Amino acid sequence: MKKLAENIRTIGWSVKLALQINAGVFWLWGTLGIGLSVLPSIALYFNRRTVSILSAFLRTGTGTFGDVLPSVISLGIILTAVGLSKRVNGNFLYFIMYDSYYFGLEEYMMDVVKRIELKTLMDKKYRDEHWSVMGRCGALADFMSSGCLFLTKLTGAVSLLFVAARISWVIFAFSSLYIAAVLVLNILTADRLRWDGRVYNEASRLADYYQESVMEPGAAKELRVYDLGAETLHKWENAYEKVEKIDRQYVKNRQIVAFFSSLVFYIFIAAMMVYCIYQVADGRMSVDVFLMLYACGLSISEVVQVLSSSFQEADRGLYFLNLQRKFVQAVPQTAADWDEGFVPAEADTVFRADNISFSYDGQTEVLHDLTFEIKKGETIALVGVNGSGKTTLVKLLIGLFSPTKGRLSFYGRPYDSRTRGAVIQRVGMFFQDFHIFHATLRENVGFGDIKSLAQIRRIKLAMEKGGADKLPDRFPKGMEQWLLRDVIKDGAMLSGGEKQRVAVSRAHMSDKEILIFDEPAAALDPIAEMKQFHAIREKIEGRTAVLISHRVGFARLADRILVLDAGHLVENGSHDSLMQKNGIYAGFFREQAQWYETEETADE
Image 1 (cartoon, one colour):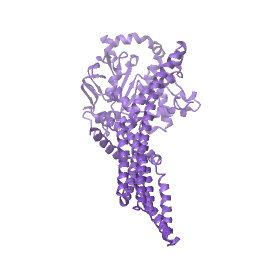
Image 2 (cartoon, one colour):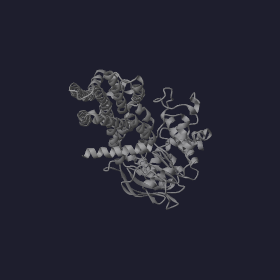
Image 3 (cartoon, rainbow, N blue to C red):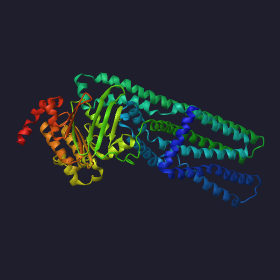
Image 4 (cartoon, rainbow, N blue to C red):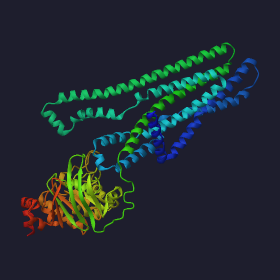
């Protein structure tokens, strides 16, 4: 009962979603399909009428060709329509509904994923479930097309049973038992006929890894140097055996169901034929009725075969839709109307942290009792060695994570789903773990302000500030050069420093009131780093800014410096005050001062 209740909930969720995506395609083809499904029953009526007239003519010799001509013409028209209606099969309906429901479900799931908390996405459990449900976005098209076909054929079966009942209750009983037996068989074997992509993907992932490793340059080098070819082949064979086992079991189960479905069909036809022949021989059934019942039986068997296959396809689609529904309803999401209704409570304090702590796993804290504030228009330098918690703190500031303890406020409002959305709307960001998109150089920079994607002059200015202005000169297509080769084989490959310059240029596209740069010069030498920070300082132009680095030479450009050490805020002040304090920051600065001597000399 629990499983049935789950399926009912999923059917309701799926139909509601499908109607939201495109109600017209469902109602059109559902209505048309039901109308076409009763044509075989109407054809039986005209078939019997035609045979009856011909039989009377053969027995009595009375009648004319004109008596049978209307029935023959009507039967021919209906049979032609029946033949055409058979083109409205599962493949046809899937093709018709593909664009609406396949891409519609993909868009829906992508919107859901967009609103998932970053911390949740980092959880392997949710990440694996995400890849599983996103990999079967065709489930809605499967379910709606097969479900539509199942309903239309079920209507056809009911109309054929109605015809059989009017002629022979025995044939009606045989037909009803046949239909019920096939449906029960499919229901009982549904679990065996479902294609569980999660299990299959898990089995094939390892096999694909071993198969593709010989083509991956880094792995291929190790395989050759250490002569691991035979061992890798052995591991691939073992992994692929699991994939083949799943394939074989699936095919075997389908063959078993097909065998028993055929067995039930032959039993049905044999029972019906024996009964009808006995009735004809005993004079209780005329030839025209016999032929009509025989045609009715064949029509029922044809409808039942489609009922069986469409049930299996709809059930497989429903299985994955059930996983998708559970994922959508279980995974934590932020509000859809992020920025709506946010009213700042304070005008001068942008960020305020009161004893905030944070843990990724709920056990080990990476930030401990941080208390600070960042005023509007301030430039803050956030410094510390690698692993001190700088990037984690930034992700809390922009709302990607929530503190596990303490209180974090934005313009005087505590963070909630709306506040975090308001932060995103107001903050321009360069991430340390930035991403280069499979797109053109122009787009990779222009994505920093999507509204300005076609403004070449503004993009070039951002590239100049980000240090990427020389890149177009080395590419044959200049600004329109595609970056990376995973999608397009002649894409350009960039060095680590070039990638960073592109990402920093993207951040320079932003015109938002708050700017955060997380290690924007990590891949650059110290001199280039200072040039980068001077460009950033020019970009700030009185806005609130947070500059983050494990190098401290740039900190002199900031109004105030926050020093993190092992997740603790250990120092807070200007460059001069912290140098006089002679603490951690002063030690960092003296150790790294030699890196900037050339730059300082050049300034002199």
